[in-house]
Amino acid sequence: MADNQALLKYLEQALVWVQANVLTLGTTVQLGVVLIAFGLGFLLWRAVRPAMLRVTEDVRMRSPLLHGVLQTLTRVTAPALNALLAHVGGLVLSGLDQPAALLGIITQLLTAWIIIRLLSGLMPNRFWSRIFSVVIWAGAALHIVGLLEMLTDSLNAVGLTVGDSRITLLMVLKGVLMAVVLLQAAAICTRFFEQRMRRTQQFSPSLQVLFIKAVRFSLFASAFLIAISSMGINLTSLAVLSGAVGVGIGFGLQKIFSNLVSGVILLMDRSIKPGDTIEIGGVYGTIRSLHARYASVLTRDGKEYLIPNEQLITNEVVNWTFSDSNVRLKIPVGVAYESDVRKAMRLMEECAAKVGRVLKEPKPAARLVGFGDSSVDLEIRIWIRDSDQGVVNVRSEVLLNIWDAFHEHGVSFPFPQQDVYIKPGSSLKIDSGKE
Image (cartoon, rainbow, N blue to C red; front, side, top):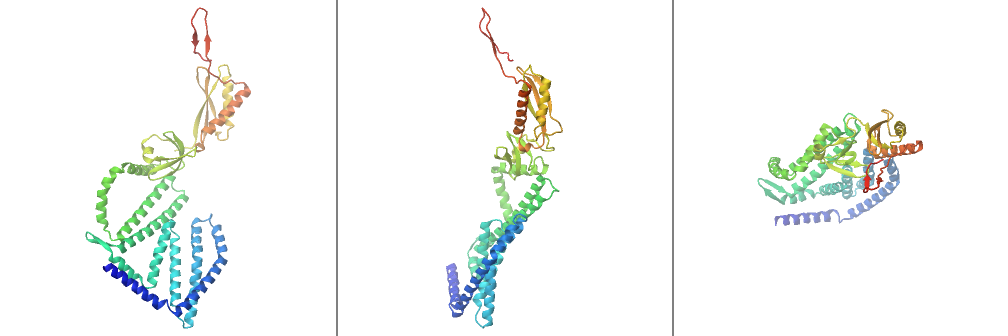
């Protein structure tokens, strides 16, 4: 009942304000001045808008941060022109001893909207930016017309008591608004810090990721705690409750926490880092990024594997570029027994040296590694430094060169054979010897 009476009182005062300030001849004149000011503002905006858009596009690639600022300024140019012309109209009416209260209110509302748009334009999340703009501007509008205090009293009257604390609807709204603002501010600061860290050459990629994640966690945790505190919730009791709940949740989220801890260990010991080429569990690819729970590995097939950090700690990982980007590849080649082996080895080294990705030092080296059932087993050993570009393609190019050279110089490739001997007066016998 008390809440209904407060609401009725609020509506009555709003009606009285409308009758006293809106339904008058002076208000009609001021509305005409507002329409004229808005019309002139629109024409001026149409005139300057192309130049502003052109300047904004020119700085897009040079400075993304400046580009965002100019975009925000472009959006508020129209209301800024309207506010300026409405203010001029108010000064003219005041000079003619005519009422100009409405023009003053409209000017203040437009000014408040401009300031709010400038602040919200810095928020990375567009949805929360719009919510923030509408809520803050509504509060500013109610304050300008003198109705904010009554609304806050009504919201403060609705609430519930938890223990020794009373939580009202006004406190909840303030807390939510504070959380949105602080979390968006934390996101902006994190993005700025990340850009600065990416540009510095003093830290390795893994340390950069570690510092960025530490700053992000600290900022977001602080924003959350400040928002909770602004709602009047005792953080001491919250810590006790979170400790009790955390024990139960910890068992259910054991794997997740294991991956989080493993992620920190990976970043600290720098065993893998963004840009490394690794091989784990049949997955061969380049690490694109390290996250709190997983590492993103992009393969040559265009597939992106999200490998949990725990597997990178507990399983065997082959890091092709851990301490040196140079990698040796061994490519087996077989020749027939009647072939000139030394000539074949010389041709193999020449063919490998023709491939652009094969290093000149150390030089390609051919080796005789064994005598097979039907072939002399050779091996060409080459070095490359760009394993992230793939190894099968290098093997293929080397083998194609060897194929052409062997055919050109009369070096024979072996192939399996089976000879069948039938002796008179004996049963069929198959000799499985291969030539």
